[in-house]
Length: 127
Image (cartoon, rainbow, N blue to C red; front, side, top):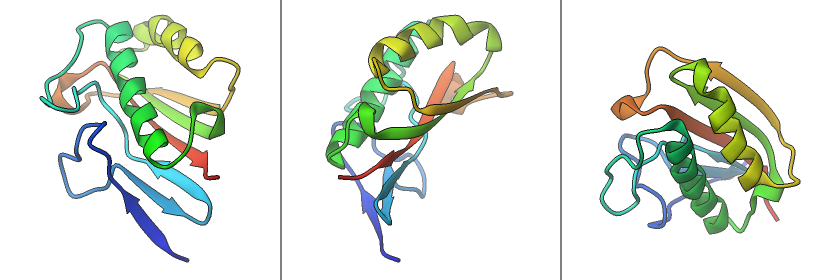
């Protein structure tokens, strides 16, 4: 099995010892994306809807760097700081994913990096 790490300047650089994504056996595994601006690394937005927009923009940039689109995503995991934000996050998520309906888990967590409201990771098929 070969592993290939992926990096794109169109998404925030990893802020720790990990890759933005890893390609393995025809699949792409992304790191969780939080709502950081790719150039300034500042948190974008205060509401979960604003933050979800930025998270999915960052995730889309990582997918594009791998030659993928949201249509190739087979699984996402959404981490919310407060489950009361689910409906607002879900509205943005549904619009961005369009007709794509990957499997999804959504969990409430005690905290997220930089005290953001949402983080999303995904698994996609390459090619």
